Image (cartoon, rainbow, N blue to C red; front, side, top):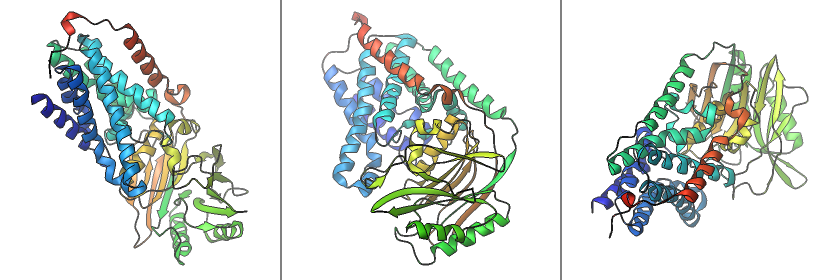
Amino acid sequence: MARWLLAISGGVLLYFGSGLQPVWWLAWLAPAPVLLAMLQSSRRQAVAVALLAAVIGSANLWSYLAMLAGPLLASILTLEQSLLWAGAWIFSAHVMVHTAGWRAALVYPAAITALFTLMTQASPHGSAGSIAYSQMDVLPVIQIASLLGASGVVFVISLLPATLAAGLHHRKACLWPLVLLAAALVFGWVRLRTAPLSPAARVAAVAVDTAPEPREDVWPLYQAGVRELAEQGARFIVLPEKIAPVDAAQWRAVENTLASSAVTVAGATLRAQGQKRNVASVFGAPDTPTYDKRHMVPGLEDSFLRGDKPLILEHGGIRFGVAICKDMDFPSLGRDYAGVPLLLVPAWDFQRDAWLHSRMAILRSVESGFAMVRSARDGRLTVNDRYGRVLAEQESSASRPAKLIADVPLDNARTFYSRTGDWFGQCCFLLMMAIAVTLRPSRSGSRQKGS
C-alpha cells in the first residue's frame, strides 16, 4: 500500500508541477516518490506504479486538449505523454536498482532528457509538453538553456529527485549530482548579475480580442493603438496573428491604415488564388517584407501554405527578425535568429494557455540570445530581454485594446547553445543507450520479490 501511495503522491505532484499553470518547485519533487516506490517493487509492480503516476500527472492537460481537439484525441495525446514519463521511470528504475552512488542518480536525468529531446525533434508540436517550461519564473534555473537548451533545464531539475530516490533506496549519500545542480544554479545567478548594460530600444504591442471574423471596427482600433504607441516613442510595434482574412488589395489598404513613424508587424490570413497563407507583414520597412508561418497548428491550419525561411531585416541600425506564434515552440527555429538582437512575434493563443505559451516563446530568447516582443490575441502581450526577464506584460482583452510599451536592452551576442544545437540532449540519448547495453545486474541490486 505504501508503494501505491508513493506513486499517487508523485503523480499528484507532477499534475500540479507541470501543465498550464505549474507550481515550479513541485516539478523538482514529483519523480522522487515514484522512483522510490518502483525501486522497492517487483518488475511487474514497478511498471504498474510508473503507469499510474504518469497517467495522474499527465491528466492536467486533458480538458485543455479536449477543448481544442475533442475527447478522443485529447486522450491519445495524454496517453502519449504518460508513456513518455513512464518509459523514463521504468528504464531509470531498472538501471538504478543495479547501480549505486552518483551513477544511479544520473540515470534518470539522462533518460528523461533524452526522451524529451526525441519528442522535440519528432513531434509536430515541437517542445510543447516539456517539463522545462515549469521553471520559467525561476530565472537562475533557465539560464542553463543558453548553454544546453531546454534539455539542460530538464536535466538540472531532474537531478534532485533522482538523487533523493537513489540515496534513500541504497542508503548511500550521492553528492556529485548535487554539485552539478549547485553549479548550474551558480551559473544562472552569475549570468543574471553580470548581464552587460546594452543600448535599449522602445518597443510596443497592441492586441484586440475578436472572433475569427473581424468586427467592422477592428482596424480603426488597431490604428488608434499604433498611433498612440508611436507618439510615445515606440520604434517597433507588434500586432497579433491572423487579425482578419484579407486579399492583397485589402492588405495594402491596411498598411495605409496603420502607417506611423514606427515599424509595425501585423498578422493576417492572406487569401490569393484559392490558397491561404498565415502571414506577418512589416509595415514601415522598404517594400513591406512578409513572413510566412513555418509551423502550423495540426488540425486547425492544415489548409495553409507553409513558409520555409526566416525573415531578418534592419531598421534604424537595429537588426530584427519576425516569426509567428507556434514557430516559437521549436528550438531549432529559434536558432535561425541567433545573433539578431530583437524578434517580433504576432501570436494567437487559446486563453487558458496564455501564460504557458508566452513562456515557451521566452525560453527561445534565453536559448538563442534575442530580446522579444510578442503580441497575442486571447493571450498575453509580453516584452522580454535575452535573459528571459519579462519587462512588460499585459493580458489581451475583448472590451478594449490591450497595449504595452517598454524599453528593451538589445545585444547581438550569440549563445553557446545557438552555435552548437541540441548536442546535450543527443548525448543523453547515447548515454542511455550505452547504459542499456553495458548494464550488468548484481546480486546486491536485485529487486525485492513479490508485489
